[in-house]
Image (cartoon, rainbow, N blue to C red):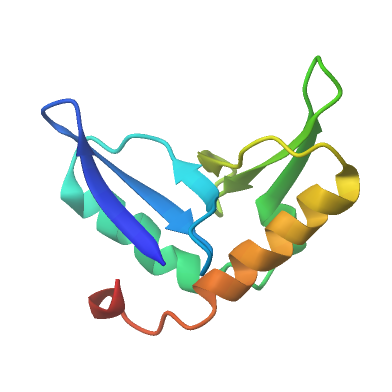
Length: 107
C-alpha cells in the first residue's frame, strides 16, 4: 500500500507499507506533485535491476537500504533492521508490495 502525504506546506512524500501496516520505505520530499507522480510511475519497474537497492550499515551496526531511481538518486530509505537477513526480507516485501501496481490510478 502506498500513502501520499503533504509535508511542510509545499512538499509531497510517499510511504510504502506492508499489508500488516509496517513502513517498508519512506520517500524523500518532492517539491511538486508532478515529480512525485513521475517517481511513483517508475516504481512499477522496481523488480528489474537489483542495482536500484543500495544496502548499507549504520554506525550502530544496523542494516538499512535506499531505493534509487535509474539516475542513481536516492528516492527513499527503509527503516533500520537488526540483521542483514531482515533487511533482505524488507527488500523482498517492498518488491511484493509494489508488484500489484499497474497504473498510477491504483495508488
